Length: 198
Image 1: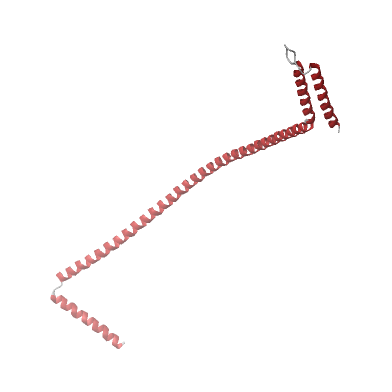
Image 2 (image 1 turned 90 degrees about the horizontal axis):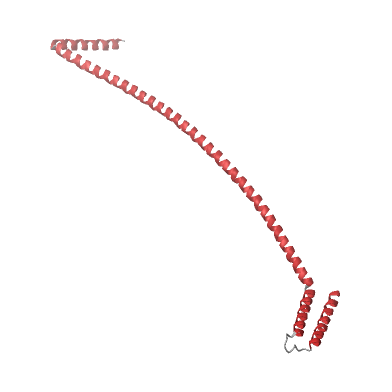
């Protein structure tokens, strides 16, 4: 209500001052000078227009400026909050990266220890395998030597039998052979007759 009263007062003042300005100059400028009345009239008109617009637009302008200020303040608060969250997340990620680097170092140390243990285990296994191979080779050599001895004994026995047979053939005459044959037959007959009586 008050603002309407001010508005209408302003309009009335505008018409009053413009009428006064027109009357003072008569609507014409000096013959040789500037039209001061028109300049004053336009200046007053312009001032009244700007004043009227400022008066009428004061509340919406104030509301818009307040809204804009609140929006900027909210955006600044949001930006600060987002920046704080980003810094916290960055610190968290940096801590995770530091922890990850520590874990990677631990894993590398564990892998090195495991590799050394595996290398030692492989050396021990190789020693055991070499010992088993050596033992197996020695057993094979012993077995082969024993077989060779047996084969040599058999060959020696065969040669001895052949040599004895040859000597017997050379030393035993036909008469000796007939005598031995007769003795053999007699021995076989005696053993059969003993079996029959028994």
